[in-house]
Image 1 (tube, rainbow, N blue to C red):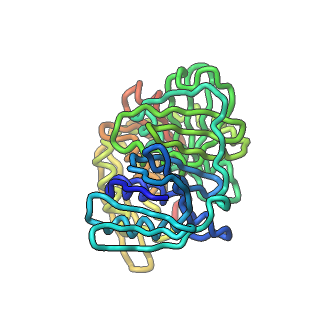
Image 2: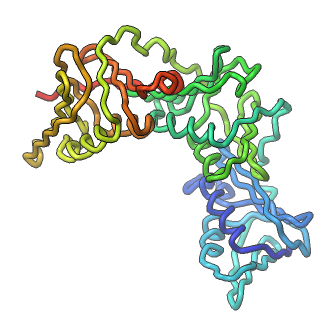
Image 3: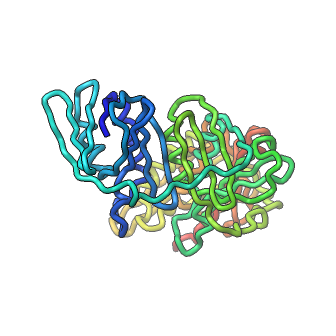
Length: 371
């Protein structure tokens, strides 16, 4: 194999592909990247067996061929190069990289040892605008669980009910739900549980561009295509919990407050909250929320009042400050509404605007107040 390629293009692709490369694996070839040179292009692929990525960049190919080399080592070498182009040659799976006056050599492995990447499903692609996908991931992924004992909660649920496509994430303590127009999954009557890592990689590839993302569904996989990049992920096996059953229907206490004002106050008070629970107490009364926190380990206390609109009975609720800040960030600027019932029941949080409420709803469970 012998070729020349633009350094910045190769470096950019390698940095993205590293997201998939296993840092520690019992199968050494999974730490490698597969390179194939042919037809004036260099194709690069990586996989961890659950998530795969394949892309290509233009290249001047003098001799076609393929090999695998350590991904992180190659990425680090190329990242530090300052020349415009890189010359790569491979003989017996030993790679030589020439750039300017530098020569770098890496030992690789046979491409025959590299796992075969999943084939594209024979299904009709669904197209979602990049900005819609970006919004969905940003407003839900933070609520997905990281507890491996409940694998379904580690993913983000996509399902259609005829009215629209609901995208949901929850870890049992908080929940985020976004609704998209039904046409995005037209004709699909199944639940998909997609790993957040796969969706994060898609957004990394999309960047700030407005390219459409094509989605194809297999029996156990989902494939995302963005320009000349293909990302394939295993779906997480369900079933997903019946999240609709935990969304309260009769919360009758409504608190309206400016999202940014509340977020800044919570950040300040949370500095002196318990380092394990991050508990901040919301003491809600007519016209104001008093936020307070204590940290017995350092003998610290914090208290701050935030104006709000509220005309029901006084209420004291404990919340994990991290959860509240994640939700406020996802809802965005403007007035936010807390729908509450008691100090021990789930609260709903959404934008004050009715349309935004329909599109994006958050739930958070309270903490037991410390004595």
